Length: 598
Image (cartoon, rainbow, N blue to C red):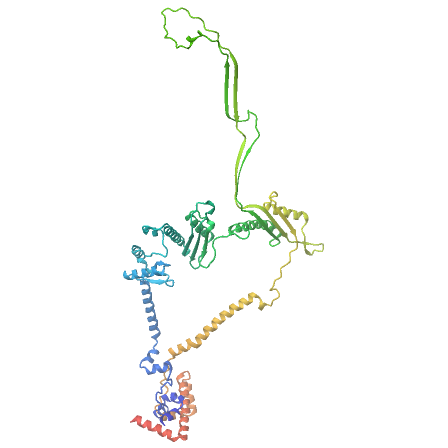
């Protein structure tokens, strides 16, 4: 019966009779858990159930205290953040084995560390980076994922030639890998060498080759110069390896080295041809645009470029000149004279064959016989040989690659506006002499060479105006308007979401956290101590009540009292109705009052 009686009490009656006389308030407040403010749930009821929380909530200095607390917390956070050590990268791109060994060494040395880049880098305090690196280097860390020529330091005694060659190739691959990884854009690299066995037969010899896989940092690329540098570096590190046998691939499987196209030209050669064509076209457009206006002359250039490398040596001889004009290279002169033989002298016989006797010179000698007649020459010959320098020319010509063999140029010129006899402006073709002038200008701009076989073709024709695909569209279907509408809709959506967030969550939370303080009742309004005072006030004549309101019309407490009085009357009528319908409930309520007073 108690619960049934309490449930029949209107909740509005309980809240309205909070300031009513004890008898009326008891009728509405007999329910357990009823609050004076009529709010059993929410922040208001929670604040009323905790002593002092309601007064703290209405304290005007509470926002200042909260702001001061937040400021102190921010200052403390900034101080802690500024005093935190600055971490720098110790090592990155480590293998799992090296990473585990380095972490173990850091833990043993009590060096703080952190991970970055999803565990791809180890960070230590900035003031300990160099010291830690030196200590780890003394421990042989990191060992790296590849081995270099240090592999040859621990050769076993009696190793076979094949195993020694394999170790040498592994060491060379490791050294090349370390060199490639030293490039800034390369995070990791792998190098594979294919070195064939040496052969004594020249025709059976094969050139070695290499393949390089580079793992680049995100957002980094290798330009053509860097790719060429890696290619030359690898080919120069292996004996007899041509640069064309080096292949470079990135981590996405893209081929970075330049390969020849179907025409036999690589990417650099095609780029060179396109550059020649583009430069020639720019020169032609630059000389025709001031005459006919921008867009009234179109030119296309086709270049035939010879990339063959030719070395030629020639030796030519000129005709012989006169001796006075020719230089003497060598000259030889010989003279021969033959004399007649004289008659025999001496004693014939054996004495002529005996050796001569020793001579004896007398003290006084007689005059000797005179000599025989002198020999006369029989013949005299004289030879002279003179060698002159030849007029010889030796020429060694080395033709560079990328020689222009032929240029073909096609030019189209638009009709020019001209006024007819009636003054109407129409498009008229160019005269023949002016068209010839245009052709001569094009030849001069392109560097026309008749011996080379260049060709120029200039055509005068009317250009057709390109139709605008958006000309007939309404304004709301124009691309610019569509983009503008999308931008406006986007910002309107953001504003609507912000407004919904404010009205659905922020504003109710603020109202629950900071409800408006209750206005105190003015001293001019008498307090109602019981139903007699309320009836006495209700029994005042209408003019007196009107006069009371008019005397303090601006005071809101009077209006609040009038509203509370009307609510009290409705609740009192509701209680009387319940008493007439079910007197047992009223009797139970009265019993509860009596028991509470005792």
